[in-house]
Image (cartoon, rainbow, N blue to C red; front, side, top):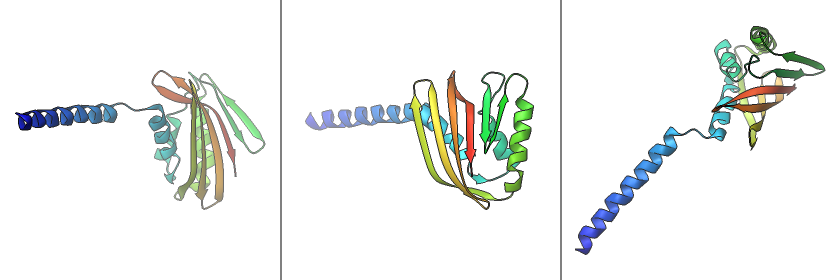
Length: 148
């Protein structure tokens, strides 16, 4: 009788554990979403990877401020193409190289998040910070600051 109870308890524990693992795998946390964003910022610098990062920017829904050196630009309704063009232009010198992640920080405070990365490229080390705002289940960039 004790053996049968032990077998049933083991089967039940295994089933509950399996359900918990499956549920965890199906649910993306905010941190996992933002880690996925930082993954788009590293690796081979290609137009496709730049476009993946731009998926987190939608000036029609969330205006974007871009600060690079002493230049500050704003993009809002109808300026998504201009933002994409600027991103591709700014990153063109790095095309074909690899951006290696040196450091990543993700801070989430309610509906606001700060993602900071330090990457090494053939041009040197670049520090970038991204302020994001929650929109539904996802995150959109509202401010980018890049320093090299």
